[in-house]
Length: 160
Image 1 (cartoon, helix red, strand yellow):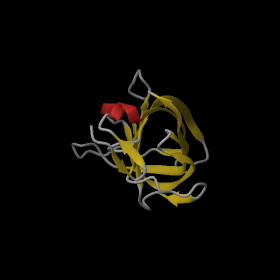
Image 2: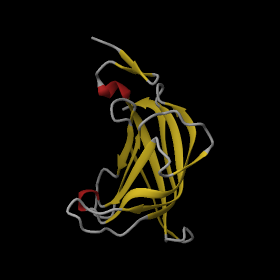
Image 3: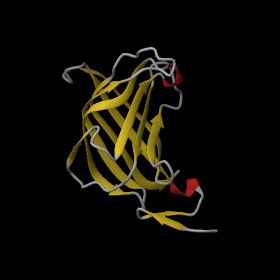
Image 4: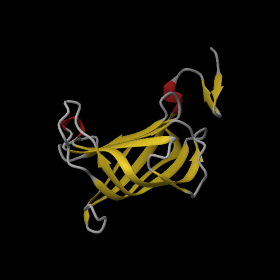
């Protein structure tokens, strides 16, 4: 078995060894980020290998439940610095209704801050602030945008 080290991540070809428990909290708001529409919390996973992403959703996946995916192209972020969405190194998708795609899309505005960044130990904590989405369904039809005052995502170093 060949071991490869890429950007300080050890890869031995078994993705489950790099999957960590994750949790998410989302405070959904109106378009002015003033009035809270709802708060949702759910679990998921953080994968440090390959595509490198956070992914979470409510296991019941009802039509109004939310899905969040945060992708990383690298882990070289300074801690406690606000990064504008779209500045590079990460992207995110927030969808209501899973495959039904009721609302949401790609997060296109707002900021993200990384509080902890240790992918080797499976410990990452970040928070988006005042974000909104744009996008449509794969068939080209539009979706209503989603707005969130806070989206918190964290992995605690415990394996899935």
